[in-house]
Image (tube, rainbow, N blue to C red):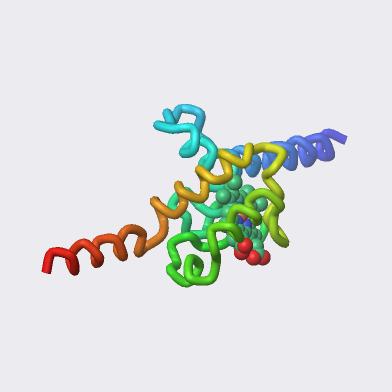
Amino acid sequence: MIRHLLVIVALLTANLVGLIWLCRSIDPSIKYSSKVEYNYARFCAGCHGIYGEGNGRIGRFKRLKPAKFTAEEFWDAHSDEQIVRSIALGKDDMPSFSVYLTSEEQQELLTFIKEHFRPTFGVNGKIAELEDEN
Ligand code: HEC
């Protein structure tokens, strides 16, 4: 009987440790400098990773294949409208966020992931500037 209890306690502890491991992608001690940064950390980073590489803990744990925002191919293949639609309505294994985020917040997230993770973000602008100088 005691052995059964010990097994149950061990299983519960293992589950708890697992849950804490998953939830650690949201660290309450971090002070986010903006609402959108907080929203990314809270709603997206678990799957897409804090650096947008598509390798967040929940995504790995559930064996999903979240989009990799650091790949230029991702941006080449997706229009802004398509991205916002996927954030709002979800896509395959990605949940819908229209209940949690206003359409303004969804737009802000698009700008955020583009500015922070797209490898050639701003590059085209810089090339245009250089050409202007010559
Ligand atoms: C539960 C895990 C999960 C969470 C949380 C999540 N995503 Fe995703 N996301 C995915 C997966 C898996 C895909 C790949 C879907 C596919 O193409 O099959 C994806 C795809 C995407 C895409 C590409 C959609 C397309 O049209 O191909 C974008 C953009 C995206 N996610 C943005 C976000 C943003 C922004 C958040 C936070 C608000 C977020 N995701 C939260 C799992 C997640």
